[in-house]
Length: 285
Length: 285
Image (cartoon, rainbow over all chains, first blue to last red; front, side):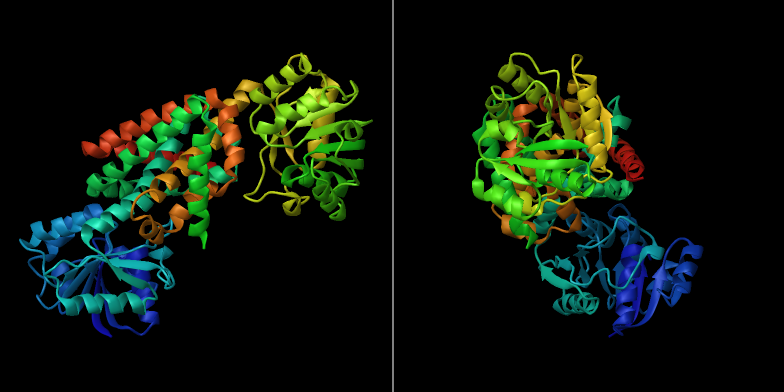
């Protein structure tokens, strides 16, 4: 039971966590911090938070746990704003899609990464955003990755783990760099590929006709290109090295497939397509 | 009303067309041709065809319309087998995903593309295959593209158009090359990209872990990598030039995005991602 929880940024992610913890009876008071009073008012009317604050010092006061639920690009600003006011007893966690960048930002903001800061990343979300879209079941059976550092306080990790378990999630731990590499491969690269494809086609002369003849496969393949451009811009800048690494690997493999098509090498195509189908079919289960 | 319809290859595509035409009362006898008697027997038991033939001369006899519903890579063999037995009065169409290759195969098989051959492509399908998976509604509100040549018989085009309309589809016409370019962009390239991504990740050391942390976006993005590898191998070889053309365009755009990530050019990333989101959101409607 967390007596006082402070959510920095009450949108889809932060709002859904507050709802889930309230529904589970795992939290006392939920304080929401944001820059816009009317958004906090809406969150209060929706029953997502109990109290809204636009002054971060007031928002952080006596918070047992602070959850930073802002876009990756806004993390450093939030950490710097928090630094002068954060009690050493408050446990802090975040929900950023990249972890190396958030840890580096915490180091810059605090001089040293606070031992009670537990970097985290719930692998959940929808194409929507805003507190209006939040719902208590968002994290149900979803994975949350925590990336504590060597000097992170074990009790703080246990508290953050318990928080996500109460929200219905499964919690795993891995190191920061490994998290960023795995997510670059399964999430960041696919978004870059989908955005680029839709933009390539949209800039072709006959694009209205092209989209007209697109079928269900294209619809699924490009669904993630409807995601928030600014959020993905943040992620690409924040996880640059890991994304470039897997992108280069992919570009080399794509060039090999191109060459196989050009020279009519059916065996090479069957090899790639067959291995992919097998891996994808296994992933389904 | 087609008195006698011959379906060459009674699988998902051919079987669903037979079912739809029967349901619409638009066909008299449906004759199925295939190499495997037991498959034809199954199609007959399922009520998809009225008669199964493994001898193509018998199957084609007195057929008003012949539909070639075999994979793209098998079209030339079927056309060569049909050539000595096809009546000049029979109207022929196909369902191949590429049209230039099928027209070229018809030319090789017949010397000149028969005036009553109407190349066609229903943009419909599922990840499944086989006559067991066929259903009458597969073409309902789906687009069918016909690509008649300059010398194609207008009455034959009208008959094939009426056949697809009876199956519930919308019918459009375009020229062969344009079809192949549009489909390379919206269908063939996305399949190549998805197959390549899943294969890239599957060949990474930590691939079991990578797939473990993949979320819904990845699932949608890679769904088409579960498609039949041989069918897509056929398509890549059959539509080589159009695929290479759009692939090169895509690779150049991807290299530009890579460069923007590397140099931290947020404006360029926002430009690409923003244009893509807008195009994808419009496509939804």
